[in-house]
Length: 163
Image (tube, rainbow, N blue to C red; front, top):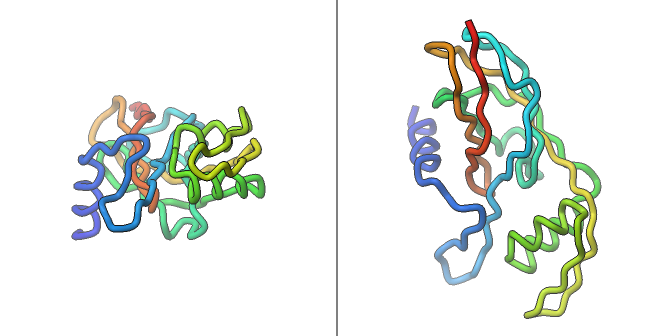
């Protein structure tokens, strides 16, 4: 219960897409970017297996590092995947500390050279997804999906519960 409360507090903080942590060492936190989900609709009694694709949604720790809430209720995370094409993406985020530029590198859209270090990051497609089982809903309707992990939190998609 304490873990749920802490995660909900984190979710309500509404973190931005890229935020620097307050510490003596500058760290970038590239929050999860949710692209799409499949399926996007299911019964109010829950039990729908859903897959969310995006960036910064899975970490090297896999399902142990991902928490998903659907309409405020915690979902059971059943899988997490990071493709082999995430090396330059990870290096960009760790070294450059600029999430917007790294997002373009991670999506394979463009290369980028850090103006501070002159390190060059070649584009590569980093495929990531997580899967979860929807919890039971109180009523039919739209429910926001919140994904939290070591990178931060993101709430960009919704799931439609139907009777």
